[in-house]
Amino acid sequence: MSTTPIDEQSLRVDLAAAFRLAARFGWHESVGNHFSAALSPDGRRFLMNPKWRHFSSIRASDLQVLDADDSDVMNRPDAPDASAWCIHGTAHRLVPSARVILHCHPIASTTLATLADPRLLPIDQNTARFFGRMAIDPECGGIADQQEEGDRIARMLATAPTLLMANHGVTTTATTVAEAFEDLYFFEKAADTLLRAYATGQPLSIMSDEIARNTAEGWDAYRGASFAHFDYLKSVLDREDPSYRD
Image 1 (spheres, rainbow, N blue to C red):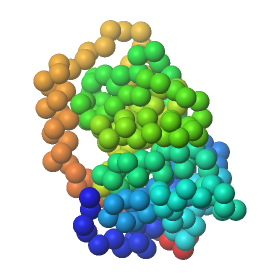
Image 2: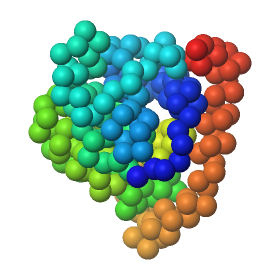
Image 3: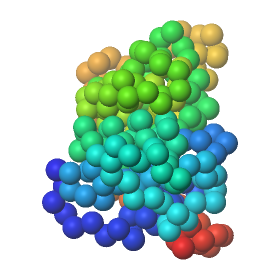
Image 4: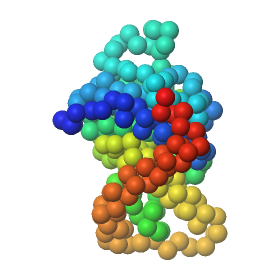
C-alpha cells in the first residue's frame, strides 16, 4: 500500500498525457479502452477516463474520480463504461499494488493475443524484458463487463504487472504512469518484433531461460529511463498541444 502523499493534479496531467500519447501511437480503439490511476493509499479511489471519450481529446480535468466500493456507480448519469468499471474498479479494489492500470488493444499486442500460443518468446532484449514478469490469461469471456470476468482478470493482475488477455488485448500496471506507459510501449514493440520474426517462416533463435531471466533483471537498472522517456514525450505534447494539462 502506498504511503506517499499523492499530488492529484500531477497525476491527472500524467494520465491525460498517457491518453494523448496512446492515440498518437495508434494504440486507441475508437472511443473505448481505459486507463486509471489510484488516488487513495488503498487504491480504491481512482481516476479514470469518462465513458466514450476519445483518447486524443482527454484533458486532466476530464478524468473522473471513482470509488471501487461504490455499488451504485453504474446507475448514475455519468456512469463509466461497463467494461472499464468491470476491469479497473475490480482491480483497484482487489490489487492495491496496481496503482496505475493501462488497458488497451494495440495492434501487435492484440494480434499476439489471438494466437493459440500467445507466449512472448524471448528473442531479443525487448521480448526478454517481460520474461517471468507477465501473465497470460488463456480465457476470453467476450466484452469484459461481467463481475466474474473482472474478478478473474484482477486475480491474474495480482500475479504479474503485465497481462496479455486472450482474444482481447493487453494490460500493464505499475506504481507510476510513466512506468506503466513504458511497459506498454515496450510490450507493443516486443509483440511486433515477435510477429515479424514469425512472418519470416524461419526458425526462431530463442534465448535460454537463464539468458532471458538475466536480461529481464538487467532492465531493472534502466528504471529511470521510463521517467526520462515519458518526460520527453510530454515535452512533445507541450510544444504541439498542451491542452491535455487543462
